[in-house]
Image 1 (cartoon, helix red, strand yellow):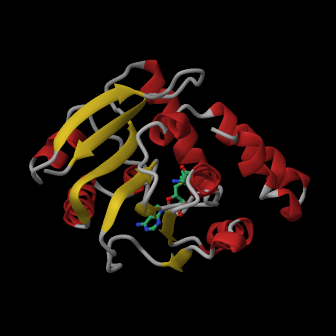
Image 2 (tube, protein in one colour; image 1 turned 60 degrees about the vertical axis):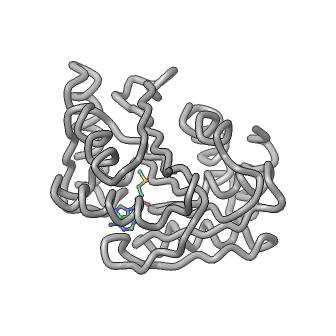
Length: 212
Ligand SMILES: C[S@@+](CC[C@H](N)C(=O)[O-])C[C@H]1O[C@@H](n2cnc3c(N)ncnc32)[C@H](O)[C@@H]1O
């Protein structure tokens, strides 16, 4: 995983953007976990892509991968667009709940679901699973509600981020660890879940869904 090269894509946006990109890509274990599972070709769809950190890492790792992303925060999406101009990704400003999703070989939805209530999370999971091509993978990373102090800390830090406008959302709706994989399995995916908070104080879990 080439963090330096991927983060350097944000240098034209200033030192703060560069520093944040480098810190997030290098410090959050989700990117290495997902990159290790990423196909080299086909279409990668990043739902709630934010500033596009996963797409930037994918751009460095896999020149043959088609990059697609969406986010309802135009500011963040603008940052992703600037960072990825050379790869001409398809990036759209949309709400994932109402967007028409393209078919994809791999779909990422990292730290996105908990901004919507549980019933909407399940609907979105079904929509993501429906956009997967045969043999494709769905990566959902989110925090669990039943991981003790880690869950409490994650909830309050996310509530603060929503309150100050750093993240858009209806609130913070963490769920017990087993609920997201159950919703994915109900869509016909084979699911494995791994802890994904190493080096951080959060309660994050990566759920990997495999389409038949
Ligand atoms: C914590 S950030 C994570 C960004 C990115 N996935 C990453 O890992 O760096 C959550 C992102 O999800 C986006 N988001 C949340 N709910 C969304 C929705 N319903 N439709 C589109 N984007 C959404 C937010 O705008 C924000 O950019």
